[in-house]
Length: 183
Image 1: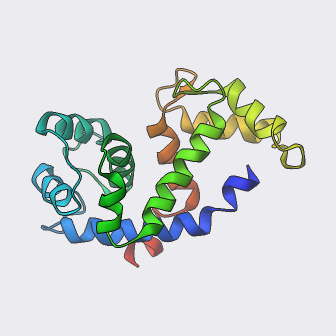
Image 2: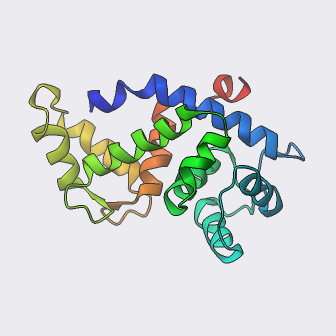
Image 3: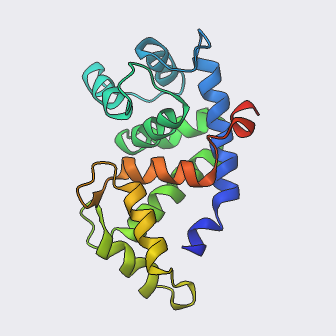
């Protein structure tokens, strides 16, 4: 786990860059990105998805169901769009930051590191195995691993999706605090 948390400062800087992008496309400054604002953002950064896929992604990332993508949801939305589009590399380049590409790749690598069976869902057993067997010098106490897993298991079904993982990493990095959001 230390090898992941040691990357938090670099990830935090990348998340701040996304905050600037979020503010740029939150045209009405209401703290959320609506469908039209998201569409303009995706056009500008050249993420090409069908309207149907864009709508599905929007609904999937709108966790609280308030018909608006808030900043943490926007991070998850961009990361998933990065995965879904073939033009993701050029999209990040258009954003003017290789740091964002690095950040998305690091987040995805961390998820894949924990997903031992490669099925796209983390299970507690896989997470314990990853955190304790891969790096013996970094063994994570069982109660810490259990607590972290429960935080990520958004559906309480014993499996953690990439979405749940990303929301927790964002929270653990601390980017949703008022000080970081205002910067």
